[in-house]
Image (cartoon, rainbow, N blue to C red; front, side, top):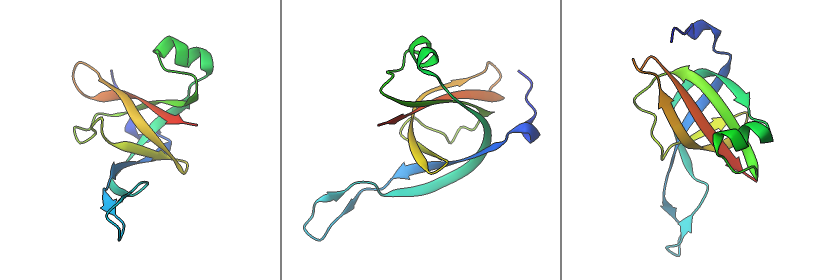
Amino acid sequence: MKINRGRFRHKLTVLQKVETKNKFGGKVDGEFTDVFDFRANVQELSATDQIKQGVDINGKALSILAGYDRRLQFEHLLRYKGDVYSVKDVRPDEREISVIILAKREF
């Protein structure tokens, strides 16, 4: 698949969860560190599209077309428009030029 990276309109940030502890030794949730930024085309999936993709419809899902980057892993999170999404699926093309990412945010 030939892609024109100059047409990617949306900026996303890849995040990694950081385990921190409070002064009592308990885990603190919601701490993230930025790993890298990338540009992509992002499309919000409708409920019908989510069912076709095999995703539960109790949240907001995104379909993301981007250039392939080996650094992206399933344990990473994505920040888009201030919301944090978990990576559910990464589908690179045969030549590893582009990738389609399915990301989901729970309500």
